[in-house]
Image (cartoon, rainbow, N blue to C red):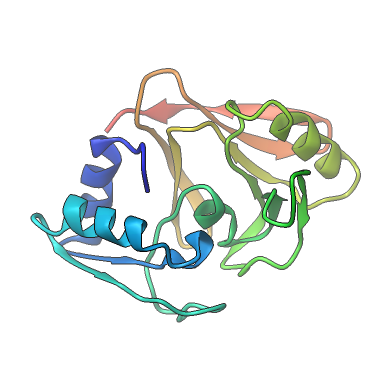
Length: 168
């Protein structure tokens, strides 16, 4: 949760209304992240957290960044299993295809993800740090940028399509 823009906080609250719930499983239920949640959202909304592993309820409306972004997809690129990037093929599958976060900030992400998709990994989306993908159901509705210049991309075998992002 650290290092995120107040614009994203505003966007989350505009979508979620007066309630925000944090699922800290990707960060290992780290207490510091829970404190940040309550400091950032507590004065403006009913903030709560739910600690459980490994499956969320199907009726939750949630957002996530980093590992919290890719977990909603069928597949993704992760370094959760060691220092090397590798494919994750057992995401929650609430969203079809695959995802790759930190596309602009970690040098190896782009080539690893592109190679995986070119070799048969599910096509999907990549996001620069500071870019958010907003879905209505399972369809991408828009890309939102916390800062000017960040992008998201639609990744298919042999292609990378930049997607326009709006500032909230």
